[in-house]
Length: 60
Image 1: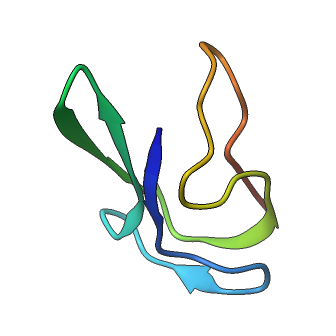
Image 2 (image 1 turned 60 degrees about the horizontal axis):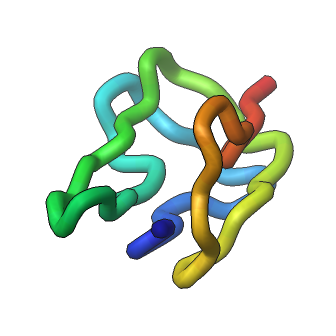
C-alpha cells in the first residue's frame, strides 16, 4: 500500500531523498532515490495497492 508519494513529475531529486513510503505487513518502508535524477513519471498515489515488481516512479 502506498502511504505517501513524496515526489511529482518534473521534480529534481537528490541521492538519498525520500521518494515514497510503502506499507507491507504493518511495517512502513521508505524508498529513497539511488542517485540524483528528475522524476519522469509517477505511477501510483497514496492509498494504491502495490504488486511485486510494480514500477512506482520512473526517472530520467
